[in-house]
Length: 451
Image (cartoon, rainbow, N blue to C red; front, side, top):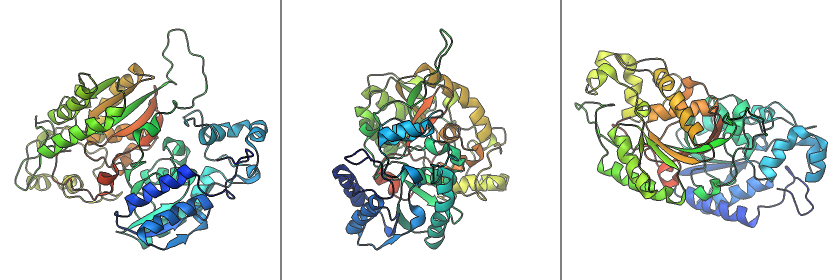
């Protein structure tokens, strides 16, 4: 943030503000019981002080690594905001987003390859920081560490984690002292578990995506406006034991735990005014959507296009019989029912269709146009969409500009809100993913359940 004289500092900044220290203390309290074994930090004071606050709650040593520092703004270090506005309009999005409270958007962000004069680009920062992330991941495989870094570095790294191009860095909302959890392999690729998972929902009540004004034909919808959508996987449904059948489209409902999750979701979103609640036609989604809609004085809008992937001939088949029928589906079983960590080498291929059923590509092609129509019907509004893992994951790939082949890197938990702000073309920002710190930090306990 600018200092009292309006100067912008990046590497020479002062200590955290009062609010910053309060957020760091909240984060430290959260991480105190999360099994963190080491703390790494950028040496820049605001990151270092955040790390020291966490260390105070965990009694862990801190390792500073210069590769984790924020983007070098070069000649702009110490310049005033007024002077910056006169110097180079290409950096106006940086000013408006980080100092003016606006949101980045597809037409309003600093291009990833555009370097600050005498400094770095966001892409440069990723090339510098990625070896540090990879070294930490390699040294601490199977264990939990905390890394305190900066918005541009984290946003760029998350692109790498989920397989998106660094040009899409702006698609990940960067909030100060917020919790993001990823499981990462030594190559820096991995699975996103939560993004801004501990941040209060009122923090997302700010302005719409910062998109430049555009002229549109009379009567045509302005697709550069946005809709805010809570993407929600249904609550826990059928529990499958060995020898029992697996269902996707069978009219199974929520378990007792799933019903409780649905009620907690409705309470969680009670502070948010929803204009509509959409749901898949499958019982487990409808039973999740109904308490949410009722709390808002709404009736769920049922959309069959939002139903889960069709298992085809595997519908009703037992866990034991499926690998015997076709071993290509073993990764799906292990990831969905046995808590196996998905990876590039071990996940359900995006184009592998279930015999007589669908592939993930088929699901994407089925849902993308209905989803975009929902967005366009609610521009300037906030809605909830309750669906299924293999429906929401491809939609998130579309929103983030990630390859559909990387859908498995976005692991959705039951009945936790994921908030996106999306324009009429389906581009937008992931503001929070699997929001709910205590649940998101816990190891998955959702094996042997319906997708």
